[in-house]
Length: 103
Image 1 (spheres, rainbow, N blue to C red):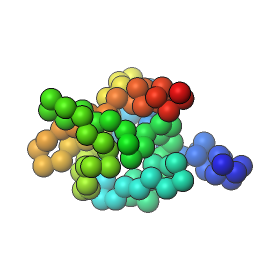
Image 2: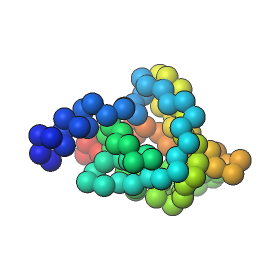
Image 3: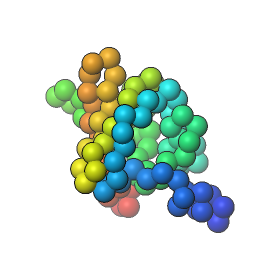
Image 4: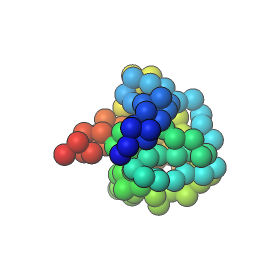
């Protein structure tokens, strides 16, 4: 990763335990160059990738398997990123993905 990419990621909106995300309508998602792009905007989501495990009913699926559009939301000081699509909720544990990426 070059210095410009690192700087761009540092100033990007963060998805972390301590931050909140208010009902973000996601029309497009991509995972270019180890980054998370929602609606063509880079997010500093350290560890969230296309392979991130998302809890769904009694099992797990990968984030890449949930096709937009959907709504993302997350409360402040909460570990759960909620994905709502067609009256179904999916849950991604943010801290777990960050820790997994550090291994």
